[in-house]
Image 1: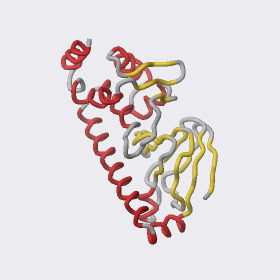
Image 2: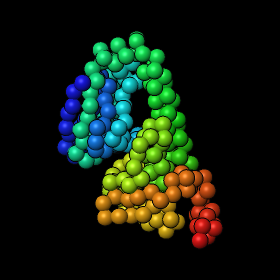
Image 3: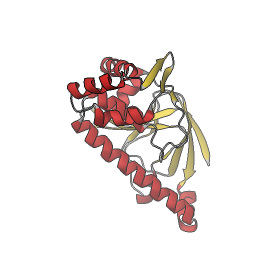
Image 4: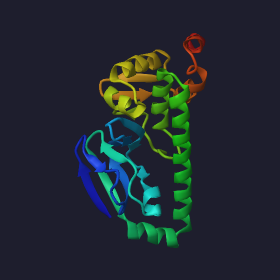
Length: 213
């Protein structure tokens, strides 16, 4: 195993690179994103401490299809491909873990695609925050997130100004508490349910807020 440190904004792994390691964040915060030839960037998901990623590219022995950037100073663990393959060949428990991890990530990406197309901005921000607490991907995630509005905007593909409006509304509903350094999730089921209960149109969102009041 190896450990590497990355400064904020540094590229942890680049699209097109041959994958020789399975990676996990020891601490810090990162994002997976893709970019077009014209420079347009779309964020796929966030990666928090304790999470492994990139297993699909290791298994398929293909070049990485996305970039991974550190959103704050980050430490990364790297497992060599040969160790990864040895575990796949010798450990049933390891293969079960990989299967569960791949299934959870597939579910996350399908949900993100649906929410990107169907939900308004406030609901997309709520989904972005709730996705960082996926129990299968982030079983030990603390309720306090040291993320700024710029980072949330990058993860939700929303401008920083619009993120501020969404976070203020989520706080008014009692779902989160904004703090000097990040935010604390007060009602995770409510934040996750915000997508269905209030995400379709402004009227339903206002009605939901009135019910909570």
